[in-house]
Amino acid sequence: MRGIALAALMAVSLPIPALHAQPQAEPPEAIRIVGANARREVNCEGRDVDVAGTSHVVTLLGACGRVTVQGSRHQVRLGSAASLDVYGEGQQVQVQGQSGSLVVAGANHRVATGVGPGTTPGTSSGSPGGPASVEVSGAGSVIHLRLSGPTRIEVAGARHRVFWTAPAGVPEPEGSNSGIDNTVRRGDG
Image (cartoon, rainbow, N blue to C red; front, side, top):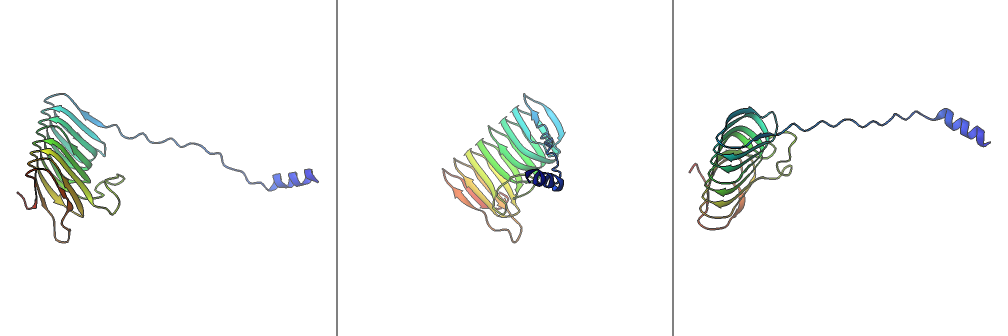
């Protein structure tokens, strides 16, 4: 009886497709610009970018992933970024479009960018439906923000000037302002 039951089971069993591991796409290689005094124009194509060293003049075309500018006295222009982190001293960064989040730490930076959640597909620039994030610390930076949605601005340190504009219907940003002689206000400054 057992042999008949086993034969019947084998006769009605369905083939199980073999499970094959799909090769995972390698993340695109990050763009790295290091050293001193380089002049570069690069198409981002969604890649992350790291600018480090001193006194580079860099133009990043198209949509970038995470852009990190560190060191001193760089001039960086870009189309858009999933996120933008600016560290060091004396950076000048201008974003034509938007960044999903912004961190500025260090001293004497000049940054102008649009800020809004979900600016680059497939990135984690804040929680879905949550506000965009702006964090400023250190001393003496001037930040110009163009808000496109709910935004949280956190300012700490000394002598920062954060100016923001927003179209009708975009709520005023929330956040905190701690430290000494910091300004956060609507207007072009």
